[in-house]
Amino acid sequence: MGVKKYDIVVVGAGNAGLSAAVRAAKEGKKTLLIDQHNLPGGCASSFVRGRFEFDPSVHEICDFGPDDNKGDVRLLLERDGIDVDWITVPECFRCISTYSDGTPMDVSMPAGREAFIDKMEEYVPGTRDKMNTFFDLMEEIRAAVVYMNDGTPNDPKYMQKHFPNMLRTCGYDTLKVLKALKLPQKAIDILGVYWGYLGMPLDEINFLHYGNMIHMYITRKAVIPHHTSHQISMAFMKRFYELGGEAWFNCRAEEFLFDGDKICGVKTTLGEVECDQVLANINPDIIYAKMMPKELVPEREKKLSAARSNRYGGRMVVSYFALNKSAEELGITDYTVFMPSTADTKKEYESMAHIDTNKFIILLCYNNLIPDFSPEGTCVVSFTTMYGPEDFDNLKPEEYAPLKEKLLKQHIERFKEVYGVDIAPYIEEVEISTPMTFARYLGTPEGSSYGYELVNWDSMISRMMMMADDFPIKGLRHIGAASFRGDGYSSTWINGDICAALAVKDMKEGGNN
Image (cartoon, rainbow, N blue to C red; front, top):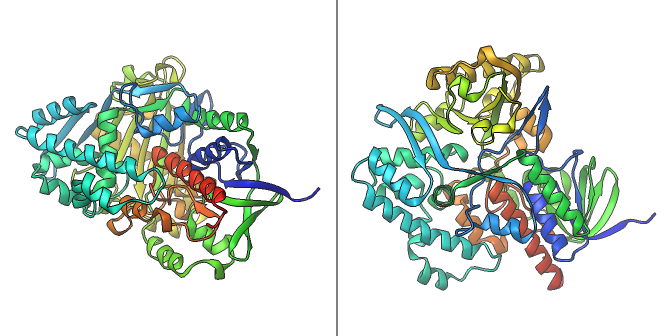
């Protein structure tokens, strides 16, 4: 049998790969999706222990929105025919910590602009006008992001006319802009709670990226799937097959093939395939180091990769507990609770670098949103945190199991200390994912599922403004968390979708890129 020929090959069936594959097939392109595992989804999956099913990663999906205020993610999913049973998260979050000044902090913030501002005024009197200014600014930024998301070159004059405040603020870190808005520190502490979803302190994360994220969470409410994130992945696959797509699982991409300086195929463990375009849900560092001729890697990409590789995103540790009592019986009343030791994000970020100093956990109790998530009379909770690489880099094989035991005990004790509930006597099943787990299943450098940290020089706005120049290798685009929109379910779906649209556009114009 001869070598198979496709228009587009998508490598990696994680979130970005799934959205890219559906978009390519929907555009009428003969599309092949390959993945090294036996099921799609990457992090968007599930696993079973005993009588319980666990979700590995999803906390909340933002930019979805209700019928009268649909976000980009909902519009994308509806346009592509992705049918999922969604559950709306009614509140934003609860945070139990200490304010930056050391005083106790226990805040519960509702969704919705007016409700959020009302509650902020209750916690920090005198902030109403400043919070309205903040939301007005975020509406402008939201419009600017929609404009930049269409994949066409951005017109600087148009942006100067329509988005002047976005341009004034997009080059600065979040803390600097919030202070420029003259928000009190306690209000900044509350607005800063979501930093744990990005893994960067407010004085480093670009304002456009952070502000856009929290604006979507607050104004549109978040959602989660009823039947774990594996339901989302299977909905994408169902639609992909309906559109005529072909998928190879248990298939690893080993090398990208070139005709001169343009990609022309993929060597896989199931044989070689020819194609015009490759959309790779793979970290660029791995592509450049292992999957293509080094002489074809542009000098700019080598320098960019070297600069970024010192700033890999958060390395996750997630502990999963199935408890043989209900959340109500245990006194767990919240869905999401952030529990940093301090609202000072710089101090907390630094303390999270090491196991012995990291006290930050984020609780999820799925049954408080989905009563039937686990068998009657039980509940499932998880605790998420992030670490730097040092404690894992030189770990010996015999040290791994004891380290996991230590992390599990830390999470149990931290939850007991902060929330006042001891789950230890009620554990029926337990599992823990470490950076090694994510490195194994996702193939990400150092187990970082977040791509690169979105520091100011390499922020979402910087990447989006350079979108036309960000894929210099002809026929090849990286589409995952390391791409222009960064990490997270919503961002990676958009990454994949836009990159697929750009690939189709290239093919229509003669395949020059």
